[in-house]
Structure formats: structure tokens, C-alpha cells
Image 1 (cartoon, one colour):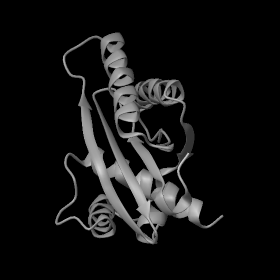
Image 2 (tube, helix red, strand yellow; image 1 turned 60 degrees about the vertical axis):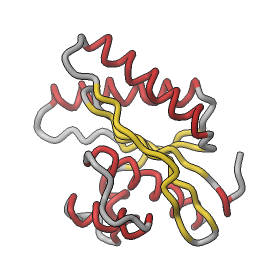
Image 3 (tube, helix red, strand yellow; image 1 turned 45 degrees about the horizontal axis):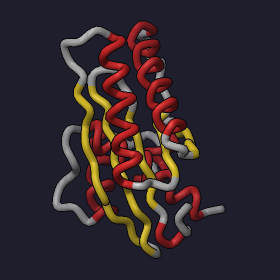
Image 4 (cartoon, one colour; image 1 turned 30 degrees about the vertical axis):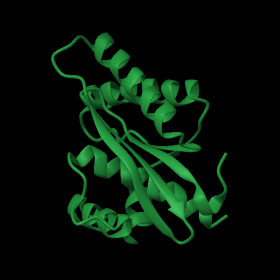
Length: 163
């Protein structure tokens, strides 16, 4: 496991069609985006999409040597069917991260928004702008799933630094 001053965290924004992932490294008081991507699993059966997600996250974790992982929690909202599907994707993400030997922390969307912007009710656009600013990027990573994964990783690093 890395030291706090040079810790890499794999952030994950779970889903069953697109899963964003990002490896963010803390260097002293600043953050750097090491690598990021989106796992696109369209036009396949649910079982095939879930297997793709597992393989893609396992590869990202092993390739980029993250020390820990952070995953956004599922937000149920009004559509329970969507929440269940995202929950299945989240479960597979947790299994892949566990198979890679990573300790995983989960964060609610409001906690992530508060950690990145200072406001638990921030808009997606505000979160995206702050992610880009904190990572020294000209613009937020795309698609938004990757930006959300960056935000999860940043949240973990910020909260870990408060301990």
C-alpha cells in the first residue's frame, strides 16, 4: 500500500451500460489523474455486460496499481428497476475490486459532491468543473461517468487526509 503522500485510488462510477473509472494519485497536497476510462457494455445480455465490467475493472486495477478504491453508492430515486440494475453493476464492481485485492470505500453522491465542491447539493456541472480544477485539467474528463469516478477517488483522498 502506498503512503498517504503518494497514494493512488481507483474511483468507480458503477452502472450496467457504462462504468467510469479513474486512478487519481495524491502527491503531497495536490492531485494528479494517472489514468481513466469508461467500460462500454452495450448491446449485450446483462450477464455479458456484467462480465465485461468485471474484466475491465480488474484490468484497470492491476494495470495502474491503485492502493485503494472508492465507489459511488447507488441512488434509488423513483425508478426501482434502474436502481436494481445499477446495484447489480455496483456488486460486480465490488467483486472485481475485491479480486484485485483492493480495500473499497463507498460514498453517497451527496458526500462526494460536498467533498469535491463544498456543497452536497452541487450540480453535475459544478462537480465536473471542480474535478477539472483539482486535477489541473483544462476540461473535465468525458464521458461524465469518468468525471464521477474522478470525484469518487478525490473524495476518498480528501476524507482519508482528514483522519
